[in-house]
Each structure stands twice: as C-alpha cells, then as structure tokens.
Image 1 (cartoon, helix red, strand yellow):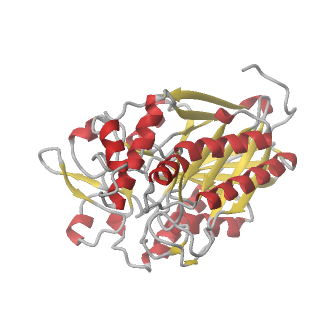
Image 2 (cartoon, rainbow, N blue to C red):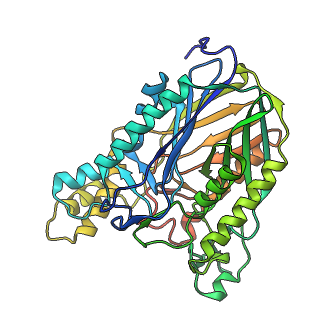
Length: 420
C-alpha cells in the first residue's frame, strides 16, 4: 500500500468506552451479579504520514475468531483505514466477558445450551468503540515528543510451569496458588519489566501505553465484573497523573502471580499497588524525544499456524451435533472446531508491528508464552521493544516448540489449538 499524505504532523486521539456487562449477562464463567469496578474498552488512534493506526485494549478475557475480525473491521471503517492496521487486544481478566462470534454461531446452530457469550452486548460495545474511535480521530492532538522507559515490577510475576529433573512439568503454579511449597519455587523465566510509551504535546503528556506480561488474576468466579489488579493499577496511575493510560497484557501465557498470591481477596490490591509502583518508576524515568509524522509506521503480516494434531474436524463435529453429550462437552468441541474450520478455509492470523521512533511494539495473537517476548527483545537490542499479546484469541495458548513435549496444562489438548 502506497504512502499517502494523511497528516503533516504526528497526532494521537484517545478513546474510552464502558465495556461492563449488564447484570444477568454472561461473563466467561458466570452470570454478572454486579459490576464491582467498571470494565473499559480504550485505545488510541495514531496519525502519521500513512493511514491511521488503531490500538485497542479491552477488559475482557478474550476476543476471538469472527469477533476479532468484526472488531478490527469496525474500528478500521470508523477511522478510514484498513483492518490490518488495527490491533485489538484483551487484557484477559477472568471475571469479565468472552467474545467469539464463531463459537457462538456454531452453538446456536446445533442447539448447545452452554454458551458463555452475550453477543448482542459485545456487538454494542464494538459499535460504541467504533464511534468513539471516529471522534478520537477528529479530535486528535499533535504529538511533538514520545518517551520510552521500563522499570521492574517487584513480586508479581512468576512462571507457572515448574519443571522436574526429567524436564517435564512437575507443578503448575496457578494464578492463585494455595500450596506454600509450590509458591516457594523460584520465579523462573519471566519478564520483570513494565514498559511505558508516553506521548507529549509540547510540555503536556497526553497519553500513555503500558505493557506487562502476566495473567491478570488475583481471584475470580465471583460474578462481580472487575478489571483485576492490572486494571486497578492502570486506573490508579491514570488518576494520579491525569493522563489517559491504555494497558496491554504482554506474552503472559505461562506467567501468573502464583508465587505471590494464595488467592486471598486482600492480595488483589497488594498486587495492584506493586504494579502501579513499577508503572510509576517507568513514568519517572521517561525522557522525551522529538517525533515526526514519518516516524510513525505500521507493518503487518498474516501468519498461518499449524493446527494441533488432536484437532479432528469430523470427530469434533460429531460431538457438537450429538444431543446425548453433555452441553459442556459439546461447547468444547465447538470451541476447537471454530478455529480448525478457520484454518481449513485458509484464513490467517494477523501480526502487527508499530514503529514509533526508536520503539517497536509487536501485536500478537493468543496466549503467548513469555519466551517470545524475551526473544523479540534480544533480536533488536538497538530498539525499545514491547509486546502486546492476547490479540485474536482463536488459537488459545501458543507455547514454544519444546513446551509441547514438557506436558502441563497450557500445551494440553484443552488449552492449545496449535502445534509445535
């Protein structure tokens, strides 16, 4: 696609709409009894020398398959850009909705009762987000400077795959780990840093993007919608600074707070405060650098991931269509079938890379393992590299090649729909 003169200067517009489910609406695991803390769908519209770029993060567990495509297309149409220049990411909180129109359509077609979706509500959020993005583009402010910085978050992240002497997964350190002996294992492989990109208009900061890799759960299955500790930290920093904050979950597929969290409700605020402290350090360490319109860029590629060997389309379809099977079993079949049918049609998964001066931000699908984030940083030591995962939720977990031979939940047949 050729370069077109869209803006003589770099500009940014910010949008934020409520994404809280109505009482009685389905979340990923339970019906909504109340909204404890509002959920948000927020993002930025970046205007440079080419077509607009949209970055969007939502306080939902995931947006997958046809829903992710519809979301990107709606935002693209609203700001007059192409869908491959739009990145939509969930933050992956669990007391929050799940959005997948492909799975929902399969379940509706076959009369499956278990359907953890409220698709009309999801489409309404998409519509409102698109309207807000359109206004954000119209009201976009000049960007004269950007800043990038990182700071460690202490005592939050830990690797949840604890290997034994045979190289196999011995323990899974869940988001809430009650066994003290399992909590006591070392943190393991993590990325301890929260990364921040800040935009300025002259001397005034106008927006901040933050990135941190960890499952965002302290405890859940409460029926009370909330953005958990990353959302609380984000909201706290936004209130402290008066600057809109858009937070993205990094490659946290194999990362939880389990070493530092036994599931006690009080730990939610403890984890939020620790994360906010890291965000504050990163904010304070930011130095401004001038930015021009031609230093704002976007590259996207379409990738085709290999389907997991356990995905048998005929068997899955037979299970889905069998009314004698339990509703949950039929739903799981629809979940897997939605992704494998997508692969069979040749549809790919989008990967995007934002160029912003010296920064590069990778926008990735699925519940990606942290090793992908660490490798990306090592590949470009000359750049400030951040990563947002939990884009298209269709493939579920995406482990490393070796992880599929190590066992463990994340690379098992109910968690990962792709192969090594």
